[in-house]
Structure formats: C-alpha cells, structure tokens
Image (cartoon, rainbow over all chains, first blue to last red; front, top):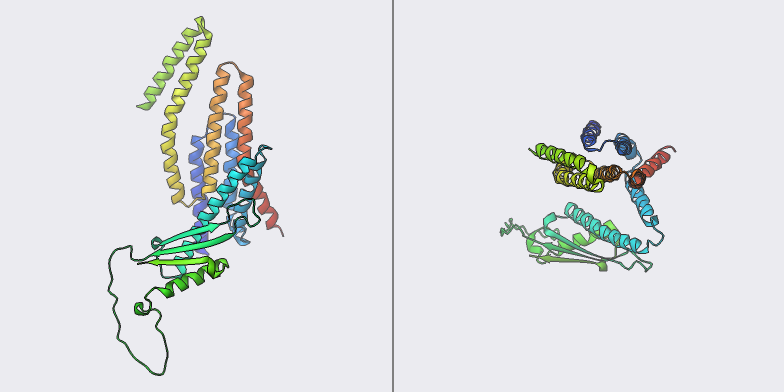
Length: 207
Length: 128
C-alpha cells in the first residue's frame, strides 16, 4: 500500500514538473490554450490512475485510445483503403513484435533460460482478406545456450543408487542430453500461456 | 553565443526589410520570410537535443510514452502552425493565416480526442 502510494505521488509530482518544463517550450499566442488542454488531460489521467487500477481498466484505456485513433485515421478520407491496409500491416507487425516480447519474457520467467539466449519467430496469418486474419500459425523458439562463452563443467554429485524409489533426476544435465526437458518445459509453458496446439510450437536448442 | 547570432540576423534583416519596403515591398516580405525560416531551422536543431533529453528523462521517470508523444506532437503542431500563420500574417494575408491556425487546431483535436474519449470511457465505466 505504502509502495503504491509512493509511486502514485512521485508520478504526479514528476508529471507536473515535466509538464511545467514543457510549457516553457510551448509557443505563445493562440495555440497555447490548446496545448494546455492536452497537458491538463494528462495530469487528470495521472491523478485518477488508482481508480483505473481498481477495476483493471488500465488495459481497456489503452485499447480504447488505439481504437479511437484508428477510427479517426481510417475515417479521415473516404478513399482511405490504402491507409487502412497500411495501418493493418503496421498493426500486424506491432502485434507480432509484442507477442515475441511477451513470449520471451514469459519463457524467461517460467523456465531456466535467460532472455538474451532466446530468439522467437512468430508466424501469423498476415492476409488481411482471410477470415482468420491475425491468427497464430507457428511459433519457433530458438535457445542459443552458452552465449556467455564460458564452458562449464558440471559437477556430478555423489550418485546414490536406491532400490526403493524410481526417480529420474530430470534436472541433472547428464539426463538431459538434448535438453529435452527444457524444450518440453518451454513448449508446455507456451501452450498454457497462449492456448496453442503443441504441433505449432517448435523449440530448437543450440549449444 | 547563439543568441548574439540570432539577434544580429534579426536586426540586420529588420533594417534590410525596412529599407527595402520603400522601394520594393514584395522583396521586403521575402527577406522577412527567409529570416524567419533561418531562425526557425537554427533553433529546431537545438530543440531536437532538448527533446532527446526530455525523452530520456521521461523514460527514466516511467512516464507512459503514449502521453509523452502526444504532448510532443501537440507542441510540434502548435509551433509549426504558429510559424506558418505568422509568416502569412507578415505578408499581409490574414485570411490564410487564420486558415492555417484553424487546421492546426483541428489536427491538435484529432490527436487529443482519443485520450479524451478514453477518459470519458473510464468515467462511464467507473460508475457502476
């Protein structure tokens, strides 16, 4: 609670100082009133931020901003088909990039892989005319292991052979020749995260 | 001493324009437009560095880039509009100047309406 209050108060203070700074930059004259309206709106937004978090409409807010701006942009000229297509391709690119980032951060948080080692390729339906526009087709995750170039010799801990338990020690590297556990982990985490078929996910591990 | 340069350019151009106006008024207008452009472009490069610093500062302070870019766009539109309108007004074309200002206002509105609409949306959603 205190943390949240602190961040809220600092945010308000920073934004107000920031807008005061920017107000020096603003031109004099008639246009100043208009710029002031916008800065006022932004201050209001910063102040009501806790209420936005209350109902988790923060995401809705951004969505509606994009929706409205897209609506305005596509309506600017009646012959805006080209513009619309262009916007759609930009939207597809943005969607793909955001998805990549999300997948990378999700994998790095749920599996034992660093962000730098991951490369994600996402194939989506890019044909705007088809009905499944924007659907995910395929995800290829490439893990480039050992990019930090130091070859580590894994310590083999004392091997105990017990007869009563049949435990496959999955986490030990010697059982993991092709990193099959890692790729399985990544696959299942993407599957549960995005609700995708496992056939559409490919994991490549490079040593 | 950039301010010296700019002031000197301005004073020289003003004297030139005043002298030229008696003989050839149309060339005096050219002089004033070119001077305005020179100073504007000269300052634009400086403004660029200020904005880069502000951008860095904004990303450090965790301000949402959506808001930041909106404010910057509005300021840029306001500047350009003001500049164009003043040049036209100097040339004695008050009507064109007011049209430029009008279009600038509409463009600012187009940028700000998404935020306004989203704000209204929030207000409507907050009240159950």
